[in-house]
Image (cartoon, rainbow, N blue to C red; front, side, top):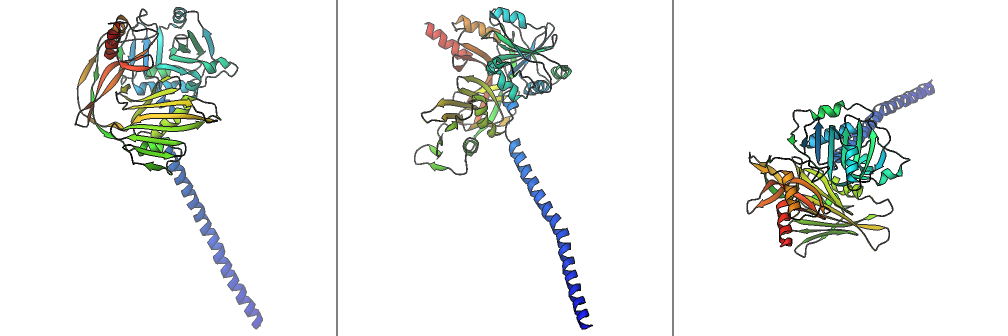
Amino acid sequence: MKFSKYFLGVGLALMIILSFYLSYLIWANPTIEGQTLVEETEESHAHDEEEEDYIAAEDVFLPIKAVYKPEDQIQASNSENLLKDLQTDLSQASFNSLNVQNYDSTEQLVQQTRISDGIEMDYASSFPLEKYIDFFNLELTDEENEEINSVTFQLIQIDFTEEKIRFINKDEQLSAEADIQSSLDGMKDSLNEDSVDWYDVVQDERLDYFEYFNDQPVKLKKFSYIASSRPYTVFRDSFFTNPDNLRSNDDTDNLNIYDGSESMVIEPDNQKVDFQGSTSEEEEFDPYTDSYQYIRKLGTNYGSIRFLDSMQNTLDYHIFVEGFPVFSDSEEGKFSVEFSDTSQEGQRSVEIQANLNMIQVPIPSDSEVEVPSGKEVLEDLYYTGADPEKLHSLVVGYSWENIEDTGVVDLEPVWYVQYGSSWHKSEDLMQQLQESEE
């Protein structure tokens, strides 16, 4: 009897212990799982936030202008919102296979691609079709046509009448076109939004078959900003492979930061930044994607950063204000990425030049500047002896002017010309051409 009570007591104790243990498993495990889920969610959210800080490729590589041709009226706009909407519409559209057509002359190309109702979007320099399809996620491929991979273009054309998309290279007299198999209503709605800021343009085939310029002077806003110097850590974190393990040398007038094959020099007198690094040659070289990997990490620190032009293996990105690129004599607002071969096998060097100075706080102003007729500017350039073969692009840009000892920057709209391999104010180039003639 005593043994029975003893075993009964032990059994009861064991059951109580087991009960506590089972309760622990029931209540503790969900807590641990929930805790892990929260941690994973927080990590995922943090990662998403980090990615959201990067600039999207479709924002960086937007065309710089849209021209709308409804019937006989021709209008143009540099609105980023409009360009983004149009690109979104194209990304959602469906197409048939691309077909590349070569022409014997520019006149023949113009004749075959002339539209009476549609839009055109252009770049300041030739852009690879393969990268455009990739960056904007277009369902526009032709795996059997290897020629597509080598096509570059300056102009995107949407023909509303024939329901076609064309990519036109005016220098090589070719176009790549495809039928649009989805509705164009969304695109037409974007063009007719009341918020779009249009200005009238004309075409003069005696000057250029594919460019449209304002025939009359146009008034554009003049902006003033309080400027400041961004911390060099913005570039350090964006450009270096391992920004947390760097060494520095400030024994000289300049600040030198380095780690292995990467280095960066900051010149305090003019705020210039020069980054030197390398990329692997194991993967196929693509200057657009490779340079974008550096630029995208700058995020929104510098406002709207967009691709402007490329020369050989050098790509230039600029900040844009109200849809127009900013130019400066000291390279403020510009990010130049240059790739070159090295003596080291399997490596390619990269150099990025930039400036720490940046516009920050806008100063309210109603000032406007009258920008002369683009047609007149082009006529004057030819009259003063500009070589048509060297004249690649003519755009309105904002000239960065530092107001001495004030910390204020004026941005004034003027015409800029890409002549040869560099950009000039149109007035400065005309003066140079006149002096060379004399």
